[in-house]
Amino acid sequence: MAEQMLAPARTAATRRDRRDLVGLVYVAPVMLVLLVVLILPALFAVFYSLLELQSVRPVGFAGLDNYRRVFSDPQMVDVLLRTLGFAVVTVALTLAVALAVAVFLDRLTTGRATLVQILVILPWVISTIVGALLFRWFFVTDISPGVYLLSQLGIHVKPLTDPTLSMVTLVLVATWRTLGFAVLLLLAGIKAVPAEFYEAATVDGASSRQQFRLITLPMIKTSLTITTVVLTMSNLNNVEAPLVTTGGGPGDATQILPLTIYQQAFTHFDFAGGAALAAVALVLNVGLVFVYLRLARWSV
Image 1 (cartoon, rainbow, N blue to C red):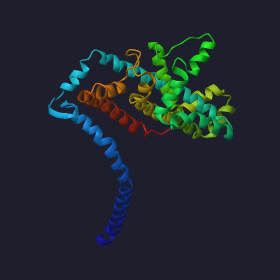
Image 2 (image 1 turned 90 degrees about the vertical axis):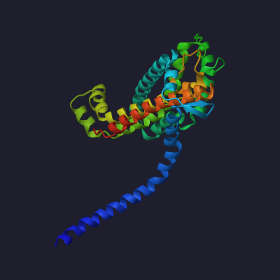
Image 3 (image 1 turned 180 degrees about the horizontal axis):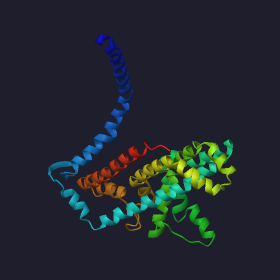
Image 4 (image 1 turned 30 degrees about the horizontal axis):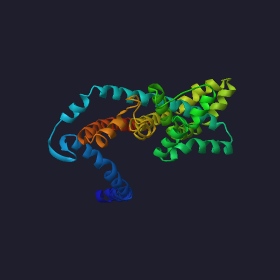
């Protein structure tokens, strides 16, 4: 009798195990790619940061000496603060503009909304290097159309020679690059808000501003939070924009952590120091991933 009662449970467990095995087979190729191109290089970076290197050949164990050496540089504090400021300002500006664009798109007809979405998403889907080069050519260089048009209005600026304008330019190119991604996520969140909420608010006499503050923002908190985390991770690892647009200059005005890692390893050929800084960036990114995974469980 007991065997007959346990038989259905065993059959269900067997089916569940078989389903899990099939699922693992499907995700195995993706996990293998992630292991080869992402996880193993990250582990090698941490490993090499603990070694004493000549060129790229290990000649001894350095322990934490590479970390002490790179962080003993008095400019490193400025680099970290500049990186934090760049990320915070860029994320805040991107979210503000993306939220405004998403609300605008939600009120457009389908044809017009599609055209605007294509224009907004275009910088995000093209290569980051190509996008940064296009932005530099059109807005930044002394002979660019953007600088020429401003000069015709009596505004004479040279973004590449002014420290403040260089950082502003870097923020703008990073915002321009990631705006389409933020708009897509926020627009999806806005589209998921039931129309009945707005209809009830209209009947109660709520203005458009009140509806946005009391309905839209609370209902898209999940999309807004996840977008913030992903944008922060993106800007903390943004090496293409400063490398192509400003090169870290003038002076060290736009020298941020990802660019410092690149230059430490491939310009100064200090691979151990570059690996140490990369390990620090890895810790920051892993922390943000855990934040992302936790916030992704939120429900409205």
